[in-house]
Image 1 (spheres, rainbow, N blue to C red):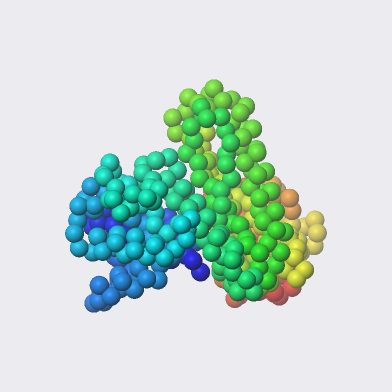
Image 2: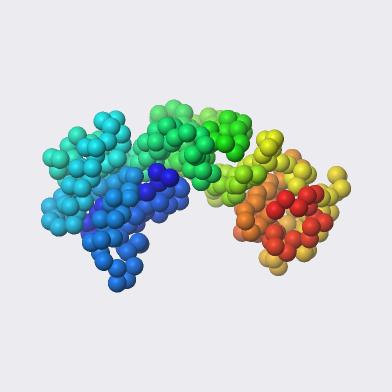
Length: 355
């Protein structure tokens, strides 16, 4: 709900449109792009008009080419402006994005635009969409909020000295009040997990600011994924990728798993059926039964480093996944996730058959 985004662009700007399409899709929106959505043989004009009318937002990619073109793109511009007249003055519907130093059309002059090359432009676009979507959902009665509509994404500011220039992105799930579980309970755990990781990274940076400032390429990306959600369970995977100099980047993960009614977190020991103190033997057993040939050597070699305190897991409709990213060396990260297929899992490995 409130996730439909129409991307208007000139043919010459298709590459940027595709990048934006993929970015929005990755962050939970349903973007519409002619080349991706219109089937072979479909009525082009009908499909565009239908998509425009069904969209909650319209992104206008403005370039020296598009603002001079006649035809479809001008019709899309005019449709967007005309429809915006029916909305509240403080609603966000049209998002103009400048791809070059073109002149903004007069009819679009009242809408705040952003340059695509501006720092964190994609994040700012996402923030605007999330802001307006929050407004729409906030006025919906709680009883009308479906599971797929009860969350958005947000970012935590890195809050570093302005002299430190970082490529930084952060996308974390945030849940609205809903009838399925206590959103504040879940949001608190997510925020604490991310803040703990960010705090550690800030300390690493501040320990040697002068040296880090000399590094030309440095970045921190925080990505999250809701791998499963229904009325009874929720599973979230958070990945941190960062590079502050050195031989290679660093990757780490956090996972959060919840059961509802009553709302509580799920630990590895809550889900898997093994004798306490024999985790390593249990992982070896799972590895022999479900691991690939490529996984067995690196995981077996690092078994002694695995404990209840550092093991991460998450689940989806198809797999119960044990993530050993925080334990295996960088060279073995391709083997870090041990996927256990739920359809064929030995039920003796689970404490309760809740999948």
